[in-house]
Image (cartoon, rainbow, N blue to C red):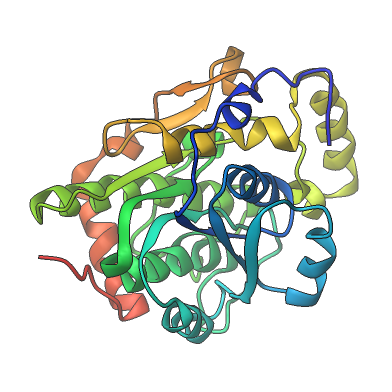
Length: 298
């Protein structure tokens, strides 16, 4: 998909050679994940497309360049996460935690977690810990501007006692993504690992994440989107920037335009809550307990 706001594709156009590298992209069958896959494969990487629906993903690969393969991964099912991780044989250069859900009604994953928290955070948390001994370069986790007004309730992360609001649940999961990145980098540094943890957000990209909004909000999103949004290809640029540029660990990349909605990728600020090291450490402990996985290095 293209638009008049295609201003940032210079990143993928100028991507350094990825020949000989292995990249895993979750949620690779559409949107930001598919564009990220396309850019890496065109630059010579072998891309493992981790997707929930393999037959559907096959239809999305008809015009993909380069080397790739499809593997099943359901982040809302920790058994699937473990099965996928066990299928990855050999070294991995880059893991891109891209898949996610947004603004869905209250629901539970197969393991009993609230859908946003379980899919967007806990699934990727477990996947990263299981694959980390094989990762040589970096872990990039896709967050969102939605984290800025969010809070994280460690006493009730799965919305079992609070009044549920889908936007608040989504925001909490995206704040968790940034806190996960912060604590992962701290642990990597402490362990003396060269691997870097980074995060990125796509701005107001025209992806399928808004499909669960109500009819009125869909109209609002479409109207505003025509004014400020950028294409899926442009929305993938901050992820590619974080995955290939020489950036400090725990960096956060996003568009440089007004409000972080669109523009060229650059390093961007995050909320005070997303910089709370103590909260990040507590979230990590909770996530280890909920997923029965642990930091495997050091």
